[in-house]
Image (cartoon, rainbow, N blue to C red; front, top):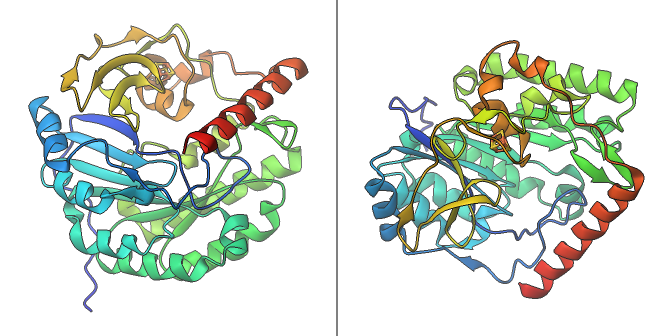
Length: 342
Ligand code: SF4
């Protein structure tokens, strides 16, 4: 089969959303909120044609970041992507284990896919023997000219095995970027809990990954990726707190949940629903009253727009031990509840 030269989409989107299609996954990573129940695939929220009508009717060209859980476990996912990519832009966040990745590579208009972000999850990848599936899928995507990068969440155990995994992916033309842990993991609060040595290694690996991207897949550097792990090394002492600052999330950026609800970010400020055909954005730069996912703040908060802005904001500090315990219990409770419901 002929290899297609990778290229970045030439037209631009006008508005963006992070679409969490489900919260199920075939992997059981300790740092993730997803639950494992891969035998039950979630239906798409709505018929793909009606979804397309909804996005068209807003008068905007959307960039839809399709994520989960694991998006390929949503039934009808490839069809949904194929329909939406006829007029809007997509990007994926996936562990790329599914055989459906090859169908996606064939069926979806590559010129409307901005990039594919592969989450490697080394421990689970090894435990479930899923390297071969990944390599086959990466070959299928890169052969068809999709822009692909990978990231690995850095637990203490991962530092030693990261370089070997990065080499293995580089052989396929894919760069591996370290991504830091956030919040409570194995009784410690991250990224603050990384040792000074781990922080130094993290920065080196991240800089090497950035250099790799510039030489192997320079077109990816032109994409404003929704979740950009290359920025993590700037915030190893904690992300800034953007609360109270004007933010264009809710006006130019949204999160969409699996039931089609549209929010400003996370599940904060319900602004619409795909199935009910409702969409009412906020005025631009409404002050932030949340702290959902700092990658979005770095893109849309007014303060993050100026080069010195983010440095003026106080940094998040780890909560007290008591609060961390409560947070951990709530997280376990939520996971158990989701497992029961699914
Ligand atoms: S949490 Fe971040 S993305 Fe959401 S409104 Fe606040 S600054 Fe904007």
